[in-house]
Amino acid sequence: MKKILWVALIASMASCVPLRKHQDLQKAYDDAAEKNKNCNTQLETATTENKVLKEENYAQQKHIGRLVIDSTENATRLQRTREDLEQLKNSYETLQKNTEKENQKLDRELKDLETKLNKKEVELNKKEQDLADKEKSITELQQNLKQKETKVNELQSILNTKDSAVNALKNSLTKALLGYKDQGLTVTVKNGKVYVSMDEKLLFASGSIVVDKKGKEALLEFAKAINSQPDVGIMIEGHTDNVPMKTAQIKDNWDLSVLRATSIVRILAEDGKIDPARIIASGRGEFSPIAENKSAEARAKNRRTEIILTPKLDELFQILGN
Image (tube, rainbow, N blue to C red):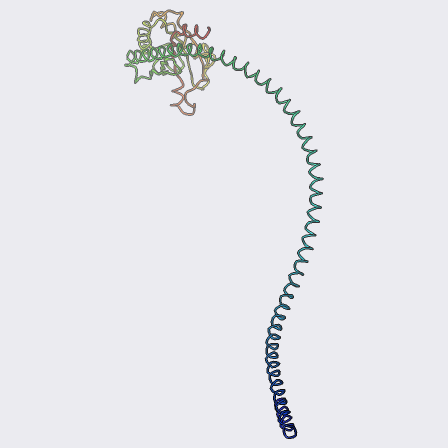
């Protein structure tokens, strides 16, 4: 539009001005056109720069927005940090106070521990002394133990010898009295002693205290075997059942058991030639049964005479006495 105006102006002026003037006008026009061109170029450059500046400004605005957000967040964090710091200060002050109290408590406990330690040291010294005394006692006990072990070995040797003698005696009597095995006679070993048990039917008639012929023969066989063992003690022990017994001569079962034992002792001493000093007569009546007195068979087992043989134990008793 400006171009057209300039052309019209120049045309109107060319019709009424001289050539020189026209040339001047042409030159002015050209200068103006050049300036206009420069202005347009500058305008375009300015427009481009303006666009760039707008974009930069937009970017700056966005950056500023982010900075504002960051600043707000930093301010929030700073406030939070200040609050945390204040809390830490309070915690530190509280901890410091508690630490002082704890230190005071620890000091008291340390003093208590020192007191207890001193007490323990005294106790330890006493225990060490007690231990030394006990060690001395242990040494003495060990010496005594060795002596006792020696004595035990001696005793065991004697007991072994005694057991061997008892078994030999049992075997000897079993062999000597073998003929009476099925007639109610048994030979056993119990508690280190030899028991020769004879049923009533082998020795006595029911209720009698007189040894019959068959029983006397068995007793004399026993005497013959035992006379070769002068160091063996002999006890005759009578036993009955629980059936009451009373006659003109016999008061009760106890009396019966003793009288039967005495009858056997007389045969062994007088006819069997056994030293009377070796023999003891005793009776236990109904009070040491080997079976419950509930049947005729059980009562028959209880009506018996036991000859109890005990090896001489003088050497053993001497060791025990020492």
